[in-house]
Length: 406
Image 1 (cartoon, rainbow, N blue to C red):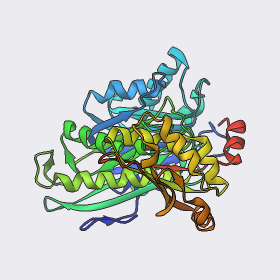
Image 2 (image 1 turned 180 degrees about the vertical axis):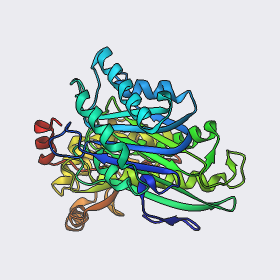
Image 3 (image 1 turned 30 degrees about the vertical axis):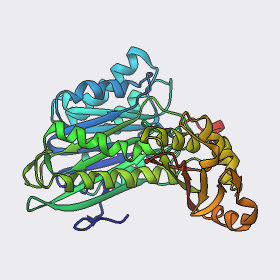
């Protein structure tokens, strides 16, 4: 990950920021795999959150939404392998019990603890295992625990996702770090993902919430793997002020530096999710410009990025502009066929209502053999623009999702 001027990449992930510790253990939810993580601040941290827009929501999402109103939190307990969604009143009681167990372990009010779950929908949580897991994890909380925690939240992920940066703000070194999980059921407007961002900056809650919402819109809400949207998606941002720096809000002259740091961490985590998409072999950036409005560009970019026909052609190495323009046509965006240009890494495949592909087919096929490339679509109707990050779709995706349980 590249950092901007004055910003430096550091190690530590979600525990890079001062005052945070983490742990990860195998509680037995998944057979012999890490499946329970803790992230804890040594002091109450200002909290912000963004959640799934799915109308069906897991018990943990409901609990986090409720507790966000308190304004501060000491930390979060996360289990993987079981979503605790569509589990009724028992699921809600189980989520609260998880919070209570961690609160008892770290000595705080249970209302200061948040809970997240990810995995299979509709199966009750194995609370005896989870209780033992939390009891085992609390003594393991450590400032260098970010790595193991990031692995404990994985489901079908093949690699863990974590990153951190530091920036000088108000004469103090401020760190922002994070971890995330997600590989399938990934759709913009949140996906089947969990993300946890920490910072040792001091930030007012309204400003922190606005910062997170913007960062998510520019990152996690710009990715898609398969067009499916989960009922457990949660991104939490904790700011505990341990850096000793000034209280930040939108009026502070160095506020943009903090916002940029949060956005960079979120963007890196979001791109990591797409690169690790279930069965994915290619990372694709979809740029749409020249639309009648930004909204039109967004609709077109999302339609292309979701299209199974487009995604499978990428997997097969076929620069099939016909599938791309078809997706633009049904996206809802204004479009004039003769005005559209389609290019892969700058090589035109379609222009002025006619294919260019036949004269440069081998060059375009070479582009699609790369592990990453950019698809550009210019509608030549205005100044609207949008970007999406997506991947191809292979037979491995079908295999994973026909077999995966926990």
